Length: 208
Length: 302
Picture (cartoon, each protein chain N blue to C red):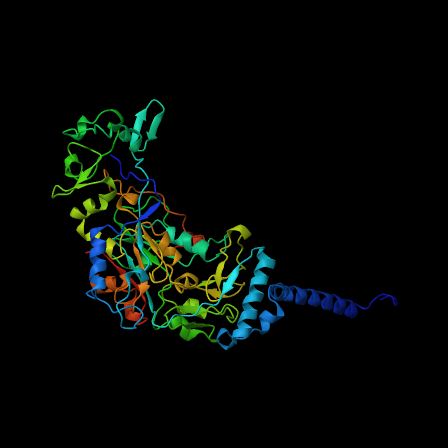
């Protein structure tokens, strides 16, 4: 059930196939776009700083009804104990017991085994059957959420920090699960930052 | 009438003169306050574009010292020029924006806005789905977001290619730079507020008072044309955070956006994200019919 097994704040992910593919295409000059500095030469890839995708800390959204009330526990607290003998998936969500009994599931009608390995709930698998570690969850999300993945790849979904000009500095990106709970991905409503104060007098004005 | 008493006419004259002097002094009092806030060098300073490199260095040093004296904060005020071959553009995905106002808050802190008025260069309008009538937008919503049936439209300076605010300035205190950013020389502005009236996007703000910011909250990374603390009585506006973006960094509002609704970059770079958005999304601009040609685009996901 771990969302991410690492506690690193951020890691470079040059191993992502899509990334290397894009880079390869770019190096071959197939990318739509001229070299940045206009000197006509194909640039060394190292001239561009990397895009770093945030690797989220362990999942803590499992809320448990205990005597002390609702508590959030990182998945790894328990699942690291079952490395040798990983727990298998139940057939249905309703069969979840113990710490998982309080979990909220609202991810369409997707059954557990669509994403989780049947024999080892701490591992994922693609539609092709290829097994993935938890850290590669974004490749899994892409399978169904194509438009979002496309927009993410082009910087118009998911947020970023750092440099727009990657010849001058790196960029940090969010991971899907930084914002979306994979078991209930719709982001809940919340209170926004306070409204402006400079137009407070307008509210009492008889207009509209 | 007794001989030694003051004649009524003289008494009235003295009374009138005293009252008049008092009123005159009172009338000039704000001017005294104003000159207290401005050094002689500040008053005599040339227009930004006419400053020689040496004069500019002196101005920047003087402004840094004044900030330290008045606000007790050590800041660096730089002069950052546009990069040749760079034209900025901004796009905002309205399907993704949830109206959380994090961008508003980030702008407030990044640009050293007055804490009391909680000023910001960004205003988020809560809009009815299916309508783009800005007059029906509500900037003062204060309930859980996103509300059903609504969408959210953050509005800030659109950095128009044909900026009406620049054309109306009687003293050329505001102009457009080669990377598209419309800037203000706060030391040249006379505070007539014509530009505020000319802007169709309500993007300009007036400093009714000198901003009050606690020393520890002041952002020390400042530029002459952007987020240095503005004096009282001048106009200010969004500068696409030029103290960040002219160094290659993202604007503060983009970094604060939790949904990734904001896309920023160099529109002359064909491999940039902003170019991808302009080429692949159905972008539109606000009040297109006015011919202002904004560099700020909006789009919905299909």
